[in-house]
Image 1 (cartoon, rainbow, N blue to C red):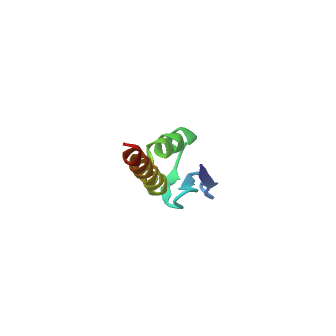
Image 2 (cartoon, one colour; image 1 turned 90 degrees about the horizontal axis):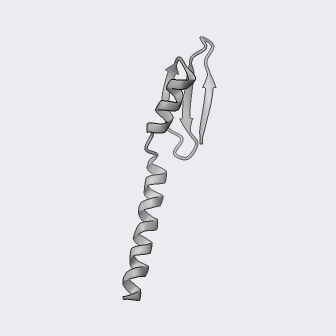
Image 3 (cartoon, rainbow, N blue to C red; image 1 turned 90 degrees about the vertical axis):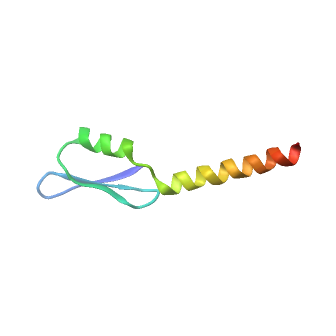
Length: 64
């Protein structure tokens, strides 16, 4: 999820609503915004995924 803000000059800024990083500013088109947003690797989501994998691995090891 992203927050897009249109600047006075018509360009856009976009910010990730998970990690609150501004991932692009002064972007001219919505197509470019979509490209930048798709390429964003959110550290909050990556950390949550790593912790979930670690927990699953611990659970699997306990069963064996």
